[in-house]
Image (cartoon, rainbow, N blue to C red; front, top):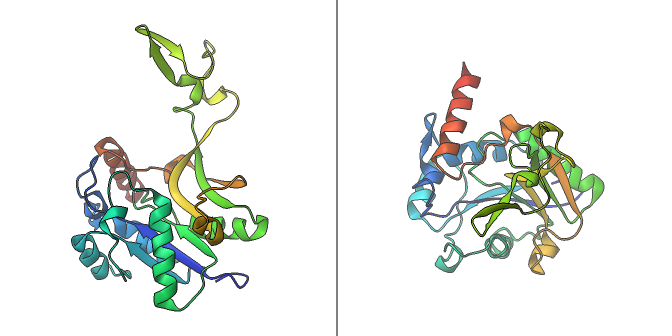
Length: 235
């Protein structure tokens, strides 16, 4: 809790991941991937109740061993490839308010594919939200190698810019304007907007994180990057 605001911490972890099979519970440096997110979330000084939303009995059992609370199983219609995050969050809010007998004000949404976030990132995002009172706070990283200037489309078998022409001879670090992309580490959502069907809103506040804490695992290449970085960091 902070400034009288009750905070629900929510870790989404459906089964059936495609890019990396069983990604959420696949061992990374000796621990299930999801455990890194659980450990960071449990250290937060503001989150009142941290829970995992999953449709998988296997994930639920592993989470209970970690341990972290898995007070319900997510219905199948919220665990399909087309299910949207906002439905998952709405379901968790409604269910947890009934279970806990508490009205939550904020939801801190922590995705397991980012294992390198720190508890400081989580609490800094919450502090930022309480101080600035935006619609939401979203963690981001600079997008040098994914700058929109580099994005192309193919028309008549020729590369064409999606946004504008790429300047010749300019290092990516000097592309203008500086671009940012979500890194999947931390989201702080306003409960009343979520229940109104609004995920981000119009007043979105960024929390900039360094590249070394912004690896978001979508495929095995990302997995190897995270693993290599953690091995190097441990050494």
